[in-house]
Image: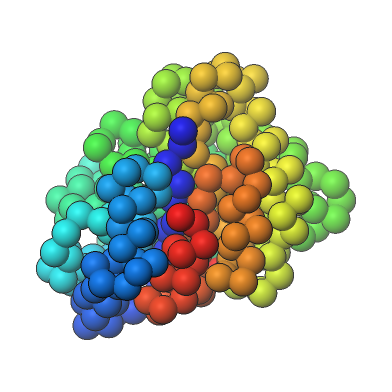
Length: 264
Ligand code: PGA
């Protein structure tokens, strides 16, 4: 059984003060609301994992506000070099030190706004797997790729290169893949349940052909792109989708809680 993941990628939202309030509210909901308590039980039973990815400067506030261990933390990016003259970058060990469990790599905004390449992401993924941090590795096609029928080719290129030197058990146990079609991110356009399922099944089959069925069965694959409480249950009902990476609808606790409610 793969543990479902409901992960909030806050992007450049929620400063430290707001983050502290968010964490307190979410923990109070997990402790007092009827559905919240069920969600907390599901986390304890390892049926679901709740993750938030605040901006770097808000991670400390999340740690300070957090009383329990029901919420896991993720960073949104990292650099692969351990230290040195890389102005503006944050190393993996610095992120580990904060208490984060996960790090998001290869988000489409990193790829398309900041020019991150598959070559760079291969280094970032390998460096992450040499630490205790677990990568949430994002892939996804542009609208023009989808329209020209190139979705599977794009996913193949984005994954084969970064995992070609990895071992199957590492991929299955440590890597989380987030399928995020770029045309669905922040646009209000969600992939249909069927399209999201097809892409996630394709990724699982790719893992099976590269590493074997055991790895493919263990690999967690999330969907991301305008996921919200209205569509999350349908997406989560798909057999190859193990959770959601949520941007806009994860920034406020109330809408994030509603999505969690649909995942338990
Ligand atoms: P969105 O973002 O939910 O706002 O579309 C998802 C993401 O970019 O991870």
